Image 1 (cartoon, rainbow, N blue to C red):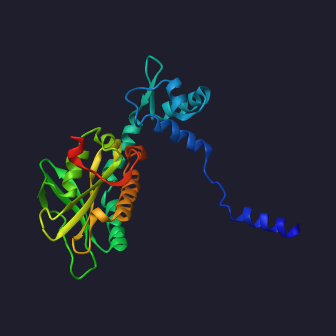
Image 2: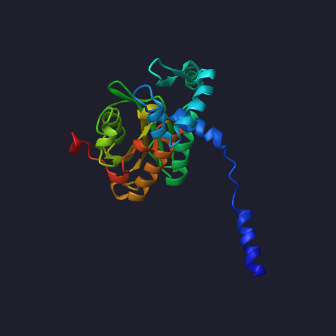
Length: 258
């Protein structure tokens, strides 16, 4: 019996204490409700979004209004105030995508041994914003700053389809695009969309390599790994996890959803 008590005590000590602050969590829950809202919110809607009682929300609102983070309208609904706007602009001015995207690309290189790149859409072209090279002596490479056409390569497929609002929900849970020998007959690639604030497309994260050793169609595990990393990166860039609807490592067929 004594031994069992000692074991139980030891397990309790091993469990990390919950150091979260309830008040802060409630504050964030209320403010987060405004992020995806299509307009001002009333107490009833905020109650539905947060699970908090109206009386509790009302007390928090008094503090938010005083600090300028929320404004109460004439119809008693609420909307974000000028202080929230200033906070957003401060984030926008100081946020550096490279701090998040480059480490993700480098992680993929370490785990796959192949080169990686991140593309964004520039009107009817795709721009390689960041790239990380494979450590292999024989490899496929691309330089950051390179411009290419929006063609049938995997990154172009992602940029063309997922840049259209609402298309993420039309993909049937398939987000991984692949291509073989489009611009280079010896190389293959797979790409996934990465989203940001407002669940809008930021760009395409790509793994590419020589077709002799890199087969996107046969690499289900690798496709799944790329998709998981894209989901994690998207959340860090400001998207909500729900932007990916029932994601699977199955290959996306752009023509099938047109």
